Image 1 (cartoon, rainbow over the protein chains, first blue to last red):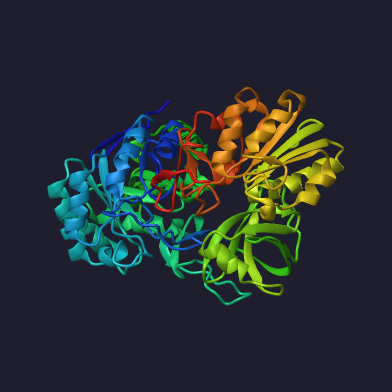
Image 2: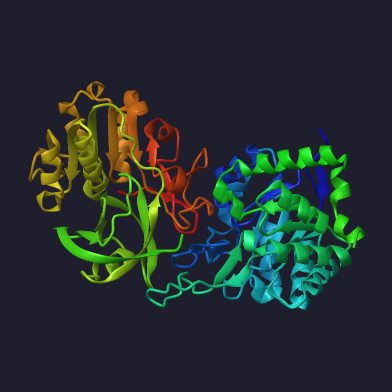
Length: 299
Length: 256
């Protein structure tokens, strides 16, 4: 069997298929369950400085081609979450803490106070006022936040980028200048659904983010553009639901991938993807590393 | 699925703070399954079915208050039926319910009767005026009622009624009510936990098994899709009856 283990952004993963932020990441037990089900690494729900209940419901809408959500960054605060991270760690996979703040100082405060195997900076949530992409669409802010966390943290720092911008490469380069160990692309695409019986926006927050199958081609393009210009690794996320999707993202330039919406199918997704990936590498007589950015070398 | 538009056909008052809403369509739920009910502009909340086309609501917060303000002819959005409901096993069943938690049990009991099962019910309420579905349960078979204040039936908690029953006689026991009441029953009936199906409640947000807000420690059971009906033997060593998570995901006490 070909080896699936990979070193990415300062972490060694037993395989390149991770659980994405915001998915089944509210409790240590659900993160551990993902690790035991075969995830190479897991990312927590985004954590902030104080408890938040999130937006009113509906917080998700299933649409034809994916999932629309506006959870609104609910979290019990990073202080309350350390115990959950310790529980998650017993699953045997690295635990990445997704964190958010409204300023470089807030991000740094969390990174100083929390112990995790790595930090993923949420500079890309599209539906929370004063957070996420409201900071993350400005390259200077991305650089400043990344720099502040790098100075504060004693663990690798990944930066999750928003696709809701004219040029995601600018954001990726800013993260790299700030000292990021990797970038994660992409977060959800800003989107909306309306109930035609009443004319009301369905999501409690009105606007939300689209994930799942529909956004995979956008994610593949973003990863490709980033991989072309950045020195640091790119972790691909956005519509990965099968091993074929994982292979495609790696060929676009991803060193690892994250699975989110496809968890609708249950925890079996991890073994499905890693199993398919192994068989593919075997059939093609390829090493995992050879997949990465294959499309860049062939275009 | 997008929320289905459902028109409220009829509103019936069951008790001072409990109403049953009849919807304009049957969406074919199994007893114990639930729907996410969207009160437009307010919130979306989980509700179990009290019949094939009815939900029974207790006014407890902003969303249920808003639901209470809707009369016949108003409409709501509905995602459902969702989750795993009760599974009928054997032909001699016992229903144990408390308060508005008796709603899915009345629905289950009626289905069970139709398929020939013998149904016994033990249902508890705070006082005589809070009793709901008394005639539905009595039509099913032997019914024991408890009230906290003793105004009807046995005085005390639902568990007081257990003394009149031999649990080993039943093929399956179905439980729904306030968490501490269910925990009380499960801990007293520990020996029978393998045949108790409990319909439990956690904070649901997505209701499709991805957000994680309803996950039950220590297994990480996703109650919104792997429940809300859970075998009691999986609850014995869980957080159930000890703590529960609220909208932030943080742990808090179990109430009621």
